[in-house]
Image (cartoon, rainbow, N blue to C red; front, side, top):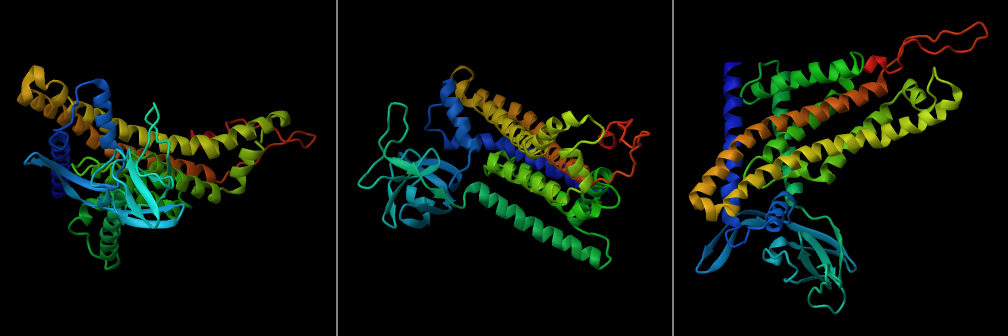
Length: 391
């Protein structure tokens, strides 16, 4: 256990240092940008937290020419002329719609990290007074973006690591190596999240999903603390997909008693039951998944925004404090905030998994109590809250 503790501490320290150094990578990338006003700082932060079609590491200036170091990712789009594929390097790091890429009879431009198709005969993007494209429209984008690549890498990493851990268990050996770090977390999710919230009878059926979603979110959150620029769990589409998975599981797994309490609540006057049914349906299909996706998305995005705002100090205060002073202040502040972000990375994975287990437990719970009846045989209201088992 001592070695495991030391490993975790070392890993946490490395993540903190890496993310704090992200400010220097970002400053190098934006040395040729003016980041002085509030609008410029907002645009700078927005640029760094959204998804991208290429993987950018850093930039530098050589002989007055700006050089970008990274590697392109596949662009896969469906346009008016069908499927078109090419590498993102065809845009030459342009994000203002100036570079036109022609493929499969269509002309494409990239504007604000979105790919558009130009209308027939157009050779460049035209904008209105609000800087919206007037002669281009969006396409169906199936590209391997930076976030998609992060998901694939984490999925492959989990497959390799947990397959190795499973083989050690089947051979009845004590886990070694990185498996010794994973084992306490696996046991914690099983015994402290799945078992008490779902119940002894059915927790094993859903433990696999809970373990997957916990480690998937946690590793992606930690990956977002590195200088590589991943912000996967800060993308609303990703958190929405995770919430939909949980929605499908507890909806399909819901037993007869669960649906009876939703559609025709026992123990309340008949006239009130339709109203309660509407409220319960809204809670099951809207409020619960919405709370899952927004909580994860908002907390992760807010953490990145705060750190990037502190990094922006080196731009906004470089005239008054000097480059060294502004950079030092930015590094110190971002370092302490990143300490908190390491905790938030675990906490958000825990909360999402805990709420998923709670919602699934409410759907599969069995009520053994029998309803009492009066002399005429009518069902009497329960003496305790119908949700009392879960409060």
